[in-house]
Length: 249
Ligand code: PGA
Image 1 (cartoon, rainbow, N blue to C red):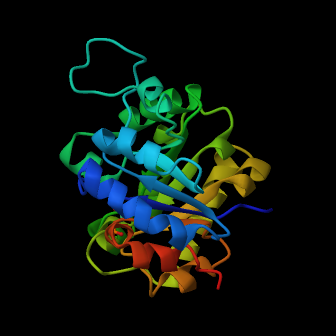
Image 2: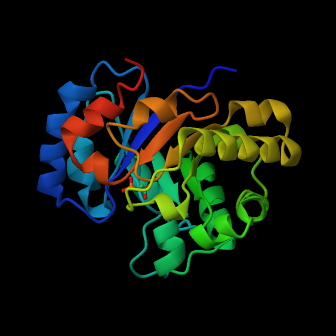
């Protein structure tokens, strides 16, 4: 089953709008001939400026969160339609930092995912275990729960992108080995086949995330189950991101 690789930068809370524009201007020539989908997920307030700066290029735009309501009394929140108006195509949902610091649960992940899909956005839904969970043999149990609760009610699972991000590998410089990442992503796909259907599971793009960088991207991307990367720190440096999107060279 052909799955187009997708490399997405997660800028997190970095780059003002003008810094973001400078970064994508530097990126444009470096990623222009990439054989994969190239996405930058930027802070909400950077979206208008970055959207303009990437027009006509192969860089696609993503947000880092979306509210589940269409509109209403949700002070400080941003709806899927607001993102769409600026050409946003992707949105990260349920990043472990949001689960850890902002009370995100499998239920809110589910609601956001359904709202994003209804608006025609592609959710990049993050799942993954903590170090303690891995060390106590709970990885599969945690992933099962995140899949069953987080993806409830999705009609066509192939419309979402999943980012498998072991929490212990995020921003720590500690990457999962190529085999570890491949094996766990293989498990996720097996579970999706069971819960949804084998054909749909074969179509879902599953990224690895967690200290992926210019040095280790090639090895990770060579694994058969790994369809892309969600890149934090290394996406803030244009030359590094430029190398990562050329993992196939
Ligand atoms: P990192 O972040 O690449 O800096 O580890 C990845 C992520 O949190 O999406």
